[in-house]
Structure formats: C-alpha cells, structure tokens
Amino acid sequence: MLGALAVVSVGLFVVAPLSISAYDDAHRSSVTCTVTSAQAASGGTRSLRGVGSSTPQVDVETDGCGSLLLRDGVTGDNVGDIAEELDSADRYVFTVGDGSYALRGILGTVGIATEMHDFRRSP
Image (cartoon, rainbow, N blue to C red; front, side, top):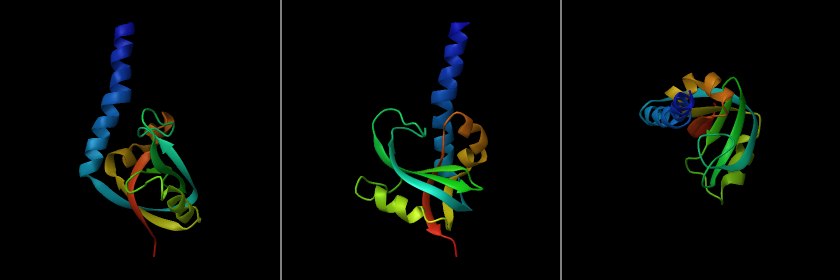
C-alpha cells in the first residue's frame, strides 16, 4: 500500500510537472487577462510555494486567467520593476504554455501556477 502511494506521489509531483513543462516549451499561446496583483517573489520550482534553490520570479494574479508565474528574463535586479509594471490593474497579453494553461484549475489545487514566458500591455 505504501509502495503504491509512493509511486503515485512521484508521478504526481515529479513526472507530471516535468512532462507538462516539456510540452509547454513546445506549445505556447497568447491569452489576454486583467492583472489584479503582482508581487516580486522567489521560488525553486513551478510551485507557488517554491522548493529547492531560490530563483527570482513574479507571482501574478489575474481576473480570468488565474495565477501566473514569470521567471523568464527575471533577475534579482529587475524583479521589483517587473512586478510594479504588472501591478497596474491593466489588461495584458501573456504568452503561456498550452498544457499548464489548459490544466490551470487542476494544477492550482495543488499549488502549481501557470508559467508565463512573456507579456505586453494589451492594445
């Protein structure tokens, strides 16, 4: 019984996120959402709580797209500026991975945010 639980846990928390990440790298879409908040943060994985080594990131909450996470292009020097730019309650176009975006409701229940790869203010 414990062995089966361990296998399921490894599959859920290690294999699935890696598979989704690989799929997302090859399949991206643009979505338009209204930002409700953005915060400079640090994390170690795709998890909102972070595990492992610390990496600068911006945690973004939106109306319509859920929780988004930006790591691409974020450094310790610019994380605050990016969070301030996004925390303006404006509409933005975000590039997201198709897999994690499609599963955002399910992934959010286990604390995994949808990773975005870039953004621009919506016209």
